[in-house]
Length: 333
Image: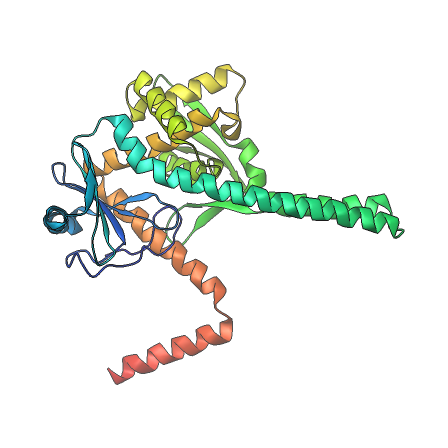
């Protein structure tokens, strides 16, 4: 049983309510289609669970949902908050706009609020830098010295990691802010497409399932500013105008190329949102059509990346002590 978010690699938490699936503090389930998601509390994205861990847990969720008096629901989607703190989202037969509003509205709204807070903080820092710079000039510091400090700050921002793209077991590509300007969708035939992506150490073109998975990680970073509910609905309309999420990537790739190879960050906001939604839905469609091995691989990679990140925070002497303690416990057992 996996306990790490596929997308942001944060822990998903646990619950003591659903005995057959004690992972997560918010679960979404579709009893008709047999789908169960864990909603990450950190990034608000939905993690589709592996098939063998799903069916009995869905029955438990349905039973607890029906037994809960305090719940909000429409004919299609319901939300129940249990006394133990677990939240359950029940999916019926929603139209795509309503489902998208429930699924993506929370995570994109959360990103939007975080971006506003970050923007305000950045404004305070920038004001402080300008005031401090003015004080330095009055104190006799040269103008190049002041602007040199600003340039260093910009350089540090460009080197900030925005996504880590899985590339095999215990290995991933680090994509930084400076790399985003070269990320682009490229057409391949009538329907196919590829993702051109720069990263630490080079540039690569992803196709097929790897392109879809890489796009999912990348678009979350590009859409970090979030979106309003109206923008979510507009993005859904764009997908529906093309037909299916599967075809939307190819559609955007062809349009972007005709307009001069527009990089992904320079696409209109609603197009980027529609791409992120399409990436999620297409990944799940493939998983539910038999590519469950891919889903399991994504969970395993999320666990491994989280473990690598944890190891980076542990000083070598402490790691050695932990390894010795584990070895000693193994000998005693």
